[in-house]
Amino acid sequence: MSDTIDPKLRARCQFRARIVKAIAHPVRLLILEELLRSGSRCVCEIAELVGLDMSTASRHLAQMKEAGILTDERKGAMTFYRIRTPCVLQFLECIDRVAQEGLEKQLDLLR
Image 1: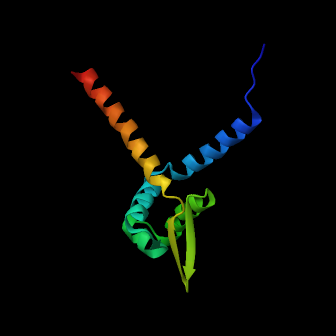
Image 2: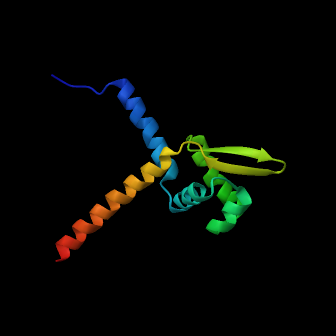
């Protein structure tokens, strides 16, 4: 008998992958860390902080906004971004724990 994956589960996994892919870049992780710390930043501040021109920073921000990670607000000519859901912090902390455990295993192999 052949088991098949539930189409709803498949769709949920595809959606999850899209979200994870949207943050799977060192610059985007830096942006998230800064927004977790500061709450909200305009594109010009984010670009300066991560060392990018504004158009490149805007593309990174747009990818995360499209995935539902960020939200934006226009104030005059400036656009400010913030994290849409606070659970992003818990996700990043989980990644840190996985990385730490991997590092510890590698160190154990060297001993």
